[in-house]
Structure formats: structure tokens, C-alpha cells
Image (tube, rainbow, N blue to C red):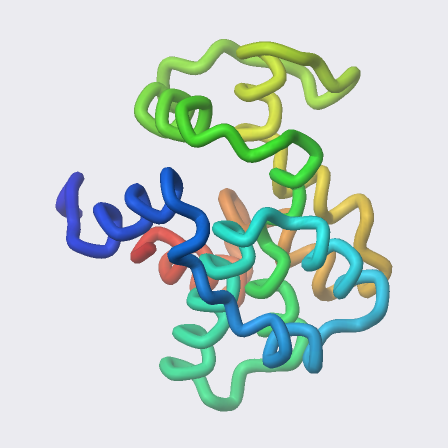
Length: 160
């Protein structure tokens, strides 16, 4: 996989200029349960746009995808909203993810340790707040799960 792609450059530019983001919030909110919609609305506009793109790609590839997989795609990064969006932290933690120190998910911390926590544990933070067990499981597994829909979600997420 190429380290720098056109999509990644566009996402980087939008990281610095969030006004360029145009998530289809109406499309997303029409599909989400009330608790999921609350998580979706709490996300930064950049994460909402990304999650909508992932959900749409999932439906392009698998038009018969179960509703819970589409909903999971729409909120798979909702755990990141526990921390304000900081583009430099996002870049730093993404580039050095493999060298990140082990950090427990709780208690939530501030500073760089908190940034590492959110990078590593955001699937859990979101999954713990989702009522539907199928959606919660897929969100919680989107970085490491082996179920077919978790694997598909992870592969599409990596494209963006």
C-alpha cells in the first residue's frame, strides 16, 4: 500500500481546513439509532465525512450489507470525539503508531499520553457507548476483529 496517496493528501488538507469537509449528515442520521446519532453528531466534521465515505464504500462493494455494518461504518471512529480534534496529534500518532507506548484505556489522560490512548483505544470508547450489540461489536473490532464484516470495515477504512 502506498504511504502517500491522493486520498490521503486530500484528507490531510481537510485536516487543516475543516471548512472543506462536506459530510452527508442527513444521509447518515437517517440510518442511525438515536444513541448512535448522538455519537455521530459529537464527532468532528472531518471524522463525520470520513465515516460517511467508509459507509458509502461499504454499500458500493456490498449492497446487501447488513444494517448494523453500515451503522458501524458511520460511527466507527466516534471514540475519537472524547478528545478535541488536533491535526498535529493525529499526524504524529498515526506516523508513530507502531512505536507508541502501551497505555491503558482508563483513566483518560491529557497531553500526548491522552492522544496515544485515543489512537489506540477509540474503538473501545465508542463500542462501550453503543446499545446495539451488533453495531458495538463491529465498531469495537474495526481495528483488530476477524469477523467478516469487521475485516471488510477495516479494509475500506484503510483506503481513506
